[in-house]
Length: 396
Ligand code: DHB
Image 1 (cartoon, rainbow, N blue to C red):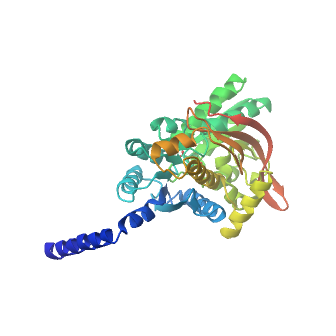
Image 2: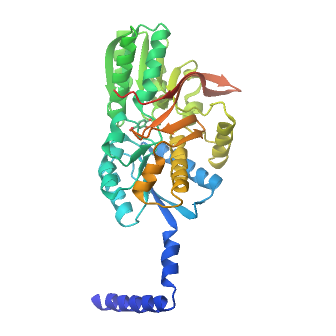
Image 3: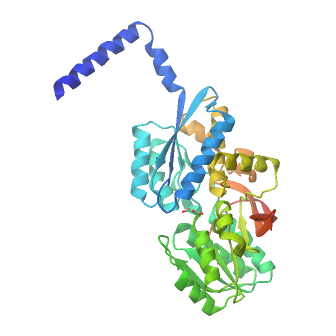
């Protein structure tokens, strides 16, 4: 076995010398140097595959619209499926992308435990890690190389808690997926709602994996709060709302309010009219009223068999924008620390509205909208009717 390998190696050496002698080696090396590699790690399979599909579609749309070359450098996206449920897999994939593929930027990260798993590798390799989805507040503290283009649960939740109190709702049960972002949502809702005079009468936490909401919803029904405040991760909301109605909570006069994660834009059609009137808060709605967003929704639906873009797609689209604009600022220099510095403080007009990367925290500052699920032109949409402008993650 060793003989052929050695022979091959000799050939390569000779070949290399010949190329060098002909003065071609620097040209070859330079051509390769021109490629900036983005390692995109998202769940493309498993229970959270919708997150990966939305982000991947948005990244592809960004490159289709803006071209694959910026500041003289071709941007190559290397897509990897981490299945969404195995932090060890995410970590191994990130390691391979750094050492074998020599990526310049890590991106994606569909769920909080997966972002946690990759964070130390970004620090060690000094590579920017663009978190396009995961939304637990503390994520940005896990590496000085993390920049976030999604949102945080405290950021989305606090404005809704204040709205609920103002609306005159007095008693609430919080109902969250039992892991990082859910715990953030639970604590932040309770803090802002009770500060405004409301009362939390129970905290319900549901399993992240294969949740059966029925027994938890029964517990809520028996306790008879005026409203339930809910958070479940993207892709799960249709199940929750279906069971909420099947269990008769709406009929019992219990109101549902939630973060926009529960009312994914791509699921609104399958959720149907049972969501009529549900008030939620989030940083993006496909119904956001701007010319840029209309064009985005139209292009996304055209390229994805009529499927609407949801908030996950926008984290991906803006993540690509951040990478492209940072490369423009560095004149195409993809050094990790230089790219990171270029990303800090960047502001732009996103399809969600105006956004800024806070230069101190590297987290996104954005408008948070209060929306109502409503029928427009025969289809259900999350219609924005109020907002808190340029709201930073308030922490927990
Ligand atoms: C996270 C995942 C989601 O799907 C979501 O909607 C919000 C947060 C997370 O794991 O951080």
